Image 1: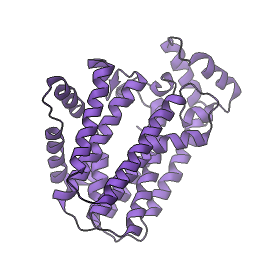
Image 2 (image 1 turned 180 degrees about the vertical axis):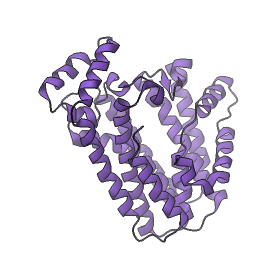
Image 3 (image 1 turned 90 degrees about the vertical axis):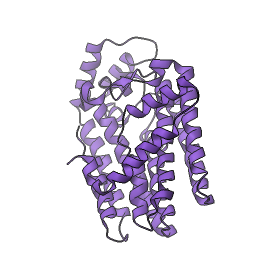
Image 4 (image 1 turned 90 degrees about the horizontal axis):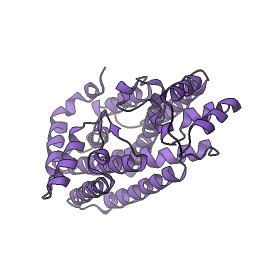
Length: 323
């Protein structure tokens, strides 16, 4: 089953959100407008808006109100992607040129800032201080995560706690925020809203770990970027941490991957093959599965509904991805 089929009853609302996203990124300056439009047209799962809508469906669903939150979360996500690509010096995202590779780093950074400003403008239409407080706190966490990602590049002595804290801020808190904001708009109790926050957090952790695994196990065509790209950029992910339990392999990583040399593609392929011959991938999937089970457990006590069933099915889909 493809992911959109899981929440098929949201198709009409998601189409409206897509149109609203397109409208929201229009700018007077043609470069800002073109760069933002190209990013939007590059596609994406739009999973954060989906989490917002599904969480709201568990309460009093008001689409006119909740779509403002859904659009805000996707715009914030888009802005972080632009900034990420500048930091990582990435040329491709989803198989298409990044904003930075098309327009240069300075324009890319201002494009990300513009999209973020549009997101904040959108959320001001909702007069609920709880929503603004949670969103502000989340943006602070995401910003700290971006700095940590820079600080930990090529740092071979980092540990599992460093990695987990980094992906929490990079991915999990924004998904958790999406779920809780949808719950707040839907008028759910604080207890249920917090359950959905925990659900989103654990789904986000599982999601990012799977992404980090797929960076080694998928093809460049499937990834839309070179296999092992995270490692090429000096990002030490969970499979690498596990693989480095092998001292010989650890030396190979440290010798081949550094910030001062170009890497022979054949040598990189050999290194990836060596990683895949260890139990690093298996162990990483096991950690992802733990977060997946926590996510599903977080939904206990919420009223049965098609929205809850969709949340359960999405978590399972995300946690079981193998390509």
